[in-house]
Length: 223
Image 1: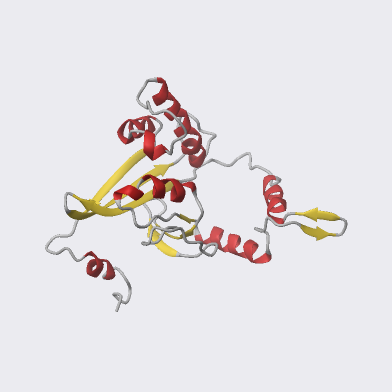
Image 2: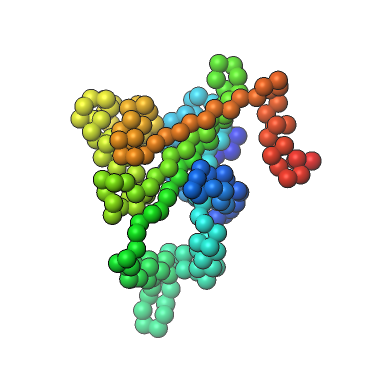
C-alpha cells in the first residue's frame, strides 16, 4: 500500500481486516490486504494527479477464511524449502498439489460469484466526491463451464486485444491498463460478456466535513 507520504509500506500478511459491503448475492464480508499489481501500477499512473493512498484487499466467505487462516497457521503457505526425511519440500507447493488432486463432482453446477469493488475518493470540480464501482462476475451462457473469475480474468485481455485490432486502443509499448485502455469502450465489451459495471456517486450536502461524516459509520463514532 501507499501512505500519504507517497511511499510504499510493507504490511503483515492478511492484516487490515475490515467489513466490506459487496453487492448481492455476496453482501457483507471481511477483507484483508493483499499484494496485487494495481497497488504498483495505479499508484505510479496517478501520482502526478495527487494520489495519496492506494490499497488492495480481498475478501472470502468466513468458512473459507477460517480454513485459510488454519492452514497458514500450520505453515502451509510458506514457500521456503524444508527437509522431511530424505526429501525437500515447499509447504505451499505441497498444498497446491493436494488441492489439485481433489476429485471433481460430476453433478456439481458452477454458480460462483466474484465481485470487483473499487472505491475512489478525491476532488472533482472543486468538490470532494466518492465513487463506488461494482462489477459482478458470474458464469455466463456462452461459456457455462467457466467460473466467473475465469470469465473476467481470461476475457479482459481477449477483448482488449479486439480493441487493439479495431484501433480503439492505439497506445504503443508496455503500459498499465489505466494508461492505455479507454474505459467506456472496455466496459461496453464487458457488457457483451454479461459483465456489468455499476457506479455510484456520493457527495455531501450541507457540509464539506467528510472526516466527521465518515466517523458516523464507526461503532463508537470515532470518539
